[in-house]
Image: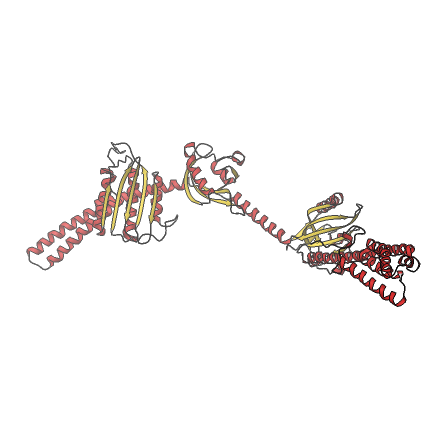
Length: 625
């Protein structure tokens, strides 16, 4: 709230109150007192004393100022005349001869004016003294407040005069350099700069070399400061009491007086030792990563969120044939138009924050040759968590795929050979043993010998061995698959599974499925066989259902069991059986999905392209459906 004083009023205006008493009461009291004194003195002396008027004039003039004093002096003449008139007929004569008359009134006017003006000047001086005292108090409080701010600042604050000599520093500056205040005040700021070229220990924990370029840059910064009067974010080096270099960032501004002359400077200095340590560590890490990326045998590629390549390492150039300058700031060139959509879906999935691991693809090289690659990709994020780029690591698995295919082909041939050997070799031998044991049983029975029962048991066991050998032979070499097709082979496999493991195993289909390629049929058969093995050996299933359904141009092969299920979804590298099933599916262009939960069994689904050729003639002239 604004405070009003006499100085806030126009010159000569009578204040409404004095000491909290209204003006009219002060005037009335003055008149009453003056009248009472006048009458008392008149009664004692027998004459009117005009000089008494000087008392109310002085009182009112002191209280109300110049205007009040003059009004009081002017009113004293009629007031005295009135009082004398009341007392007797010769009032005018006595007023003139005994009470001072007109000359006395004029004197009272002068006295009233002088007293009133002195009163106003006195009040003005008091007001100015009070305002000055308040201003000094406010200035002192402001100064103390600023000193507290400077002292509590975590940054160093230095004040210097026009010569560059330090006049004030805060505690942070002393702590940074290790000096006392007496050791700093009066010295030049340049006394704490490094003056010689050389190698120094730094507070970052490293040894740094300051060469002539550093000093040239420092001189240039000083010249910029002198020319512009201010400089920001100046990275410099100070030398502390232990002769260690302290990296700092400082902001300096010159101070000027009203005439524009330079009167000093203020510097705000920040110790950036920790920042420099972080920058050095980041640089080392960055250099290490760059070296690893360049030396990596895997193709490492970074793309922005638009899909344009921003990094292409030497391995990528070696694998795909394009140099970095040919692909930089451009989309991936290594696929045909028909396969671009698959890549786009995978890329968008990674941009949304999902990682891709070991995704196998078949892509083009610069020379037009196809290669098989394995892609693992993950998003790169900024400090806010926003995806800013995508990194893809790719390896050439063409030779690996060729070897895997060769191994599977060799394994298939060996399984076929072993199956044939079991069927034609061991099976025939066991059949002969069965014949001989049955003849032996008959001879012993004709002689009523007790050993006939043992011979009959031998015959039963050999027959069981023959059955198991046939089932094993069919598993290793499904002859029905080549002769009668996949559906007949699956029916036979289901029946054999029921007999071997004494569980329920059914094969169903919605309509016949024709497969021309025996290789495709073999891989599908092996997927089913591996699923059954997992269900019976690990899943402890009691019921297995094999279904082969056709939906539009897709075939869906499903193996479902009621076993113990899986604790977690299968991942890459876990379980040779699932790995082989995935590989077989990829070899025939199928998609394999394995699902399951604890106590809910397992479902294996293999989706592949249906064959529209109703004749279904295989390469060997046999129907494979």
